[in-house]
Length: 263
Ligand SMILES: [Ca+2]
Ligand SMILES: [Ca+2]
Image (tube, rainbow, N blue to C red):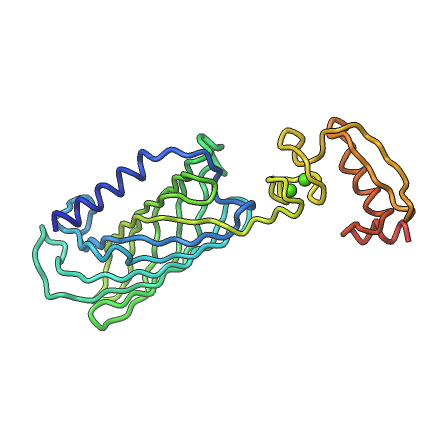
């Protein structure tokens, strides 16, 4: 019990103190998976650790897909083994618990502006399908949490949810969770380190200060195959248009309108 509490406290401390330099989960990394542990508290109000039902270290798994405008869809699964009924640490007959949760998360950075790009607070609302002592119930699931990104793709996650239903066997309860989250899935076609969604020139390598466009003087020459080669200036605001035109003339544009125009 003490060791479990310590593990939980250490993880919580890491979550609060870890400082990174990465950005929130967003269109650049639309997918995320998470692994962690959870605590179920059957009392009316969370906070008193004598009521905590700790679980195995890996007892929660999650998968997320960023939708748009700060909204993310999350699917999560949890297992636990309950021995405390939530009445001042009162023991109860050991009961297996599992739940499957489907939630929509909203990234608060989207609302209040990004305070720190490594800090990613959110709220969520969803439904949980819970198994408790051979009874099943559908519960409403709402809560809040945050991700703390330590690298561009890896972060700590901490959240609390309140679950409420009208089943006699499974009434309201709380779930706290802590874990690691890994986000992925961003495309960088030209390999310049700027994801396609932020790259003004997604097919031409460039610099960060030029939003992914090359920072050189404009120079367009015709080669033996009658294709244009170019060096382009990122200082020119029309650089993207210029590159679009060159790609269209060369037939390498992904844009059908351009292809038709130059056909
Ligand atoms: Ca790029
Ligand atoms: Ca680029």
